[in-house]
Amino acid sequence: MAYGYKIGMLPLTTVQRLPSYLRVVREMNRVGRTVVSSNRLGELLGLEAVQVRKDFGFIGITGMPKSGYQVEELVLAIEHCLCWNRVRDAVLVGVGHLGTALLGYQGFAAHGLNICAAFDLDPRVAGREVNGTPVSPMDQLEPVLHRLDVRMAILTVSPEAAQDVALRLANAGIEGIWNFTGYPLNLPGNVIVQDQDIAIGLAVLSAKLSANSRENVPLLLEGPPH
Amino acid sequence: MAYGYKIGMLPLTTVQRLPSYLRVVREMNRVGRTVVSSNRLGELLGLEAVQVRKDFGFIGITGMPKSGYQVEELVLAIEHCLCWNRVRDAVLVGVGHLGTALLGYQGFAAHGLNICAAFDLDPRVAGREVNGTPVSPMDQLEPVLHRLDVRMAILTVSPEAAQDVALRLANAGIEGIWNFTGYPLNLPGNVIVQDQDIAIGLAVLSAKLSANSRENVPLLLEGPPH
DNA sequence: GACTGTGAATCTATTCACAGCG
DNA sequence: CGCTGTGAATAGATTCACAGTC
Image (cartoon, rainbow over all chains, first blue to last red; front, side, top):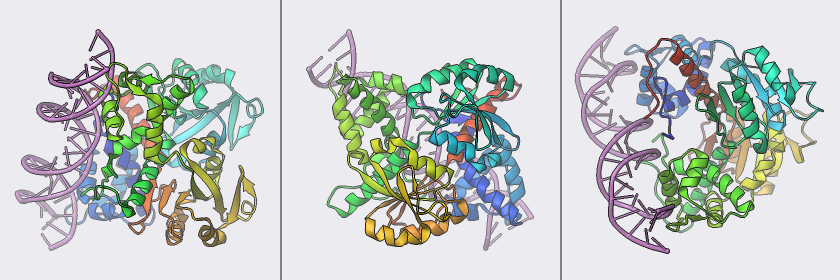
C-alpha cells in the first residue's frame, strides 16, 4: 500500500535510472557516436551491464548482438517514456531562494518542462518577473490556473504553508505536484505527489561519512555490500 | 557491486526515512507531546506501522507496549544516527542559481550543516558574500581547504566542470561530495559521492502523470501495486 | 485492549549463468 | 568471439501474523 513499485508498466527503479541513461546517450548522439554496448554504459554510470540490458528491455528497446544499441533509438525511446519529447507546462508556487533558483534553471528545457507562471505571497515579488517568468500574487492562483490548462505544479513554499497551498492546487485541477517543501502532503488520491526532499540526500551522505569514520575507530561494522 | 544496500549497520531505505521521522517527532517535541505510537507516525507519513517499528528497531529504539515511543528519545536517536546533533562544516563550489539558493537555505542548521566557505570562477561573484557566506575565487580552493579542516563539499558547478572540480576536491582531502551537477563523477573509492539529481524526481513525476493519462485512454495497464 | 517486537512469508530488484545470434 | 536477451538464483525490503507486555 505504501510503496508504489510500478509506474504504468515500468519498475520504479528503472524510471529512476532513465535520466542518467538519457544524459549519456544524448551526449553520444551529439558527438556522432551511433552505437553503444550495455557494458560501456554500465561502466560510465557505475551499473552492471545486465541491469542496463534489463532496463532497455522494459522500455522496449532491442539491441544487436556484437555491436550493441542504436544511440539515437535510445534517445527517442527514453524521451518518449518520460514524455520529455514534448513540452509540459507547469506553474511554480513560492518564489523564495529555491523557487528563484528553479526559475533560473536552464536544464528544464531538456526535460520538456516549461514554467509558464509563478506565484508568491510577498507583494515585493509578485507583479515582477523573476528569471524571465512572471510572478503573480497568491490570490490570482485559481483564476490564472483556470485560464492556463496546466497539469503540474512545483511547490516551493514554506513547510507551514505547504498543505494549504497544495489543497488549493488540487482543487484547481492540478494533477501532479512536485513537492520541495519536505512537508508530507495529504491530498485526495487522484493527485500525484512527488516528494523532492533534499534532506534525504544529506542524511545518506551524513550517515555514510560517519560510518566511514567509525571504520577507522574500533567499532563493529559490516563490510561493503558484497 | 553497484548497489550499496547498507550504511554501517543500517539499511539504506531506513536511513532515507529518518529525515521525515525526525521532522515529525521534532515538531511533536516542540508542542510538548511526549509519546507517539508507530500507528500514528505511519498515518502522518504514509507508511505501514510495522515499517516504523522495524526502522526504530534498527536504530536501537525500543518503545513501550500500550503507550508507544518516547518522542524525545526518538529525536536524540535519529539525530545521533545522522550526526545531525553536532555541526558539520562544508564548502560549496559553484555559486550559480542553485548554489546561491543553497547558501540561503535556512534549514541546514537543523541538519547540522554549516557552509563555511564558497568558491566560484566568476570574478564578479568571488570576493563578495552571498547570503552571508564569503565567496572565494576558484584558485583559492586548495589553500583555503588546507586551512579549514572540512570533510564535505557541495558541488553545484556546471556538469562540464564537475569532474575536474571533484578531482581537485578529492585531492585536497575532501571525504564526501554532495553532487548536484547530474554528472556521474569518477573518483577514487575512498571518496563518498552522493548524487542529488533533480531530474530523477521529475522523471518519476512525468512518468506517473503520463501513466495516469493513459488510464483514461484505452491502453493496457497494471493496477496499483497491491 | 492497545500497543510493541519479531520470525516467516511475500514481493521486488539485482545478479548470475548461459543460450542465441551476427 | 562479443555482444544481447532471459530464465533461475540470490539478496533485500516490505508486509503478514502473531506472541509478548504493560
